[in-house]
Image (cartoon, rainbow, N blue to C red):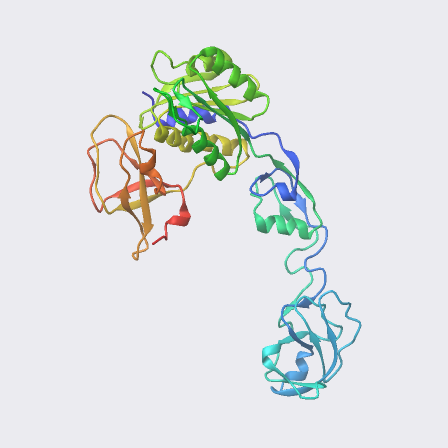
Length: 410
């Protein structure tokens, strides 16, 4: 057996981010930028009001409560053509340009309009610049608003759009093919013939890819023959940036995936026994074209563990991310995690919650067996239990967070 770290190093060392391409902003969410973009105009472009209220001269309110003449009204999108003079105020709406002569805005809630609508009582002294958005306050001309490696989230895409940018050079989302191998597998929703089982690995992986921001490609099911597996891999190469298969990587007589990967990838392929449970058998190779192949163990829980430990980090590298792994945090055990010594790192699906002490607690441990897929459906973390005799209540365990949104759940 080899360690988890050794296996991960073998996977990651030969991979490089995908070649950047020009993406429309609408298609770039959660991609990684590959260029520098500088602002070509200030934001805001003109001084404007941050509130609905009255634009005025702060000096006119120095004495506290004061009555001013209302001389105009300005709405967002208007041109401020009026000059505010001594003792005057202008009705102004959020986003409307500040008129010449005015240097402050008083909120509507702090002003009382007289019944005739001609004057307004300002109830307190205003400060110069109060509720005024200044030119370039957010972004100045020439400011770098994007750098290579930046994650293109909603706010950053909004900043780009505010500068009139319509596309961005970024690493594309990897297209990832998913293939299940096994003579026993079926996609049939009807009655199964003897010896057949329905494929759950492919749907789970396709969903995992989509949830992680990659583009899943369904390559279907193939039988346990080298010819079928090779043909399916070769089909996927033409349409995918990476390929995942499940099954066929252990030591059985029909486990042909590892031999096919050896033929396709040569010395860039390896069949491993990784010191983890579940998911010990694992095969990986990089084709001469640069496309990586991941051969995951066929048991359903093993498949998902392999995705989290090997596939997802590698795909994030292809996508240009620097942070490859999910967050791992030390958690307090509220239940024991017994185990036996076997030289392996045990990966256990758990339910974790934030408690009143501010720490994350492991409240429940899923039943452990690599075929018990339904047992892990409510889990939101994977605990990493080191080799030994297990952990007791109150001890700490490192756990990878799968779904942070559930940490504060009831």
